[in-house]
Length: 209
Image 1: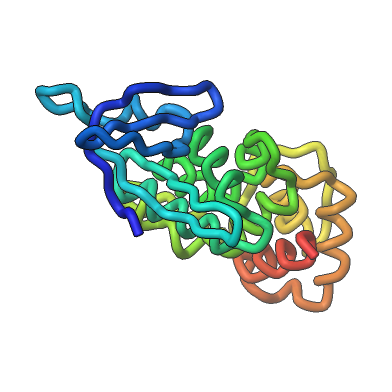
Image 2: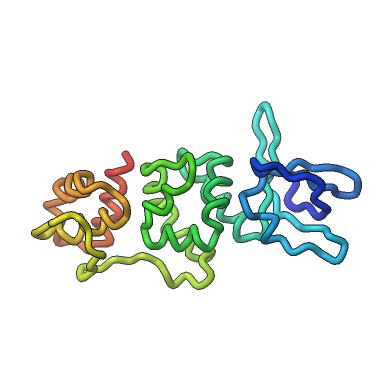
């Protein structure tokens, strides 16, 4: 398996495919948008890519990253059901590791769905499954979204009242439509005494089914 490449970039395609010349051998590597700009070349113009070798029955594909954090984020993304390597590369092209960690920590489903090819269900699944796994990639890990019973989400178009108001507001703020949020809150009505963080997580599980 190839885990690292150090050489000159001899070609670059708009789809993210680059060719790295390493001692006369050209390696085709698929990289997220902006990766080469984050690679500092040495005095001879060579760059270093951290690589994940993806093996299938019909192909071997190299995915390259500017640093270990982005490679770690790629591996975590591809461990989520429904997220293949190419979707993971698209995610990191829009949201580098630190931004991705912050978006997941805040439960920002709306920002995650800005990635081409990623729908709301996959975005919600990322929040649900990676919330506690990406904190080390955010730089300081201090932005983890942990709502409390007193949590007050920014104003939303939902005029929710009653015990489920905070839950509905939190879900709408994360990018879900009001009817979806209200349905989730109604299903969890018997559990409204539980902490809001627990209710948000359970709502996400139900919304991504």
